[in-house]
Image (tube, rainbow, N blue to C red; front, side):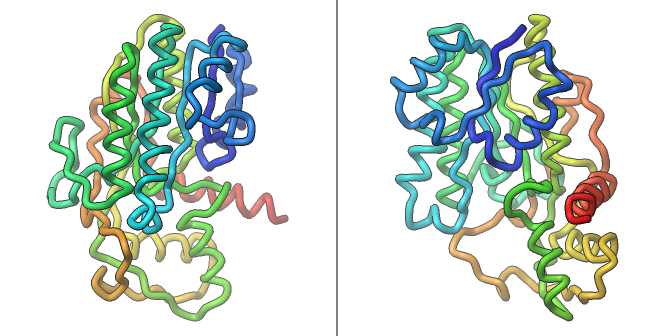
Length: 290
């Protein structure tokens, strides 16, 4: 039995891991958010490890306010990097495994073929810089798996899918950028991948390093928005615009498709197409409102 510390447990990914926990009842889960464990305090982390005999950490905690980070990089760095360093240090002391979630924002978006894990990082934003610093901190632990993901959504919290559903009911038309290309990630699929990593670790078959995970397929935010409207039966029209017509404080990668070959080979994960997973999420949202 592994003792799993899940940080950031009230977020999208943390909530999906909560849903999966009963399926993996042979492990013991400790779900924490800042109220239960402030990971910016190393003494609190160390005490939690000792009290609960933690041997796996899944770090879902992050400062994800991408635009706000441009004027508050110090706070983003504290949560996205310094806190990860503290977690890594406790992992080293307790010989624990660290599973850390990162982002496509570590890339500059100038590629034209899917990013492999060894492609040089070149973040465009404060958020991307702090997440890259967090990766470097995580890799200090002896047993580390980093999962870079992109365009995360779920039935929990705030995300693009839920925003589109809300606006689709309120408006007759929306403008959405078509020149940013990637692949959406259903948080439930990423949570399942994480648990496959945990299961491999429990069998002493952990494959360490950096891996990419998103759903299969490629689309723009415009394509994604149109599919959401169509699947949800909404009549709101979606019009394509360029990123320059929708300025943001933080620069976004224009291309952030991730190559998932490595995670499939190492952990045997089966990754659904983004349309299939979107359908599951919309069904879940519809069921919760009925």
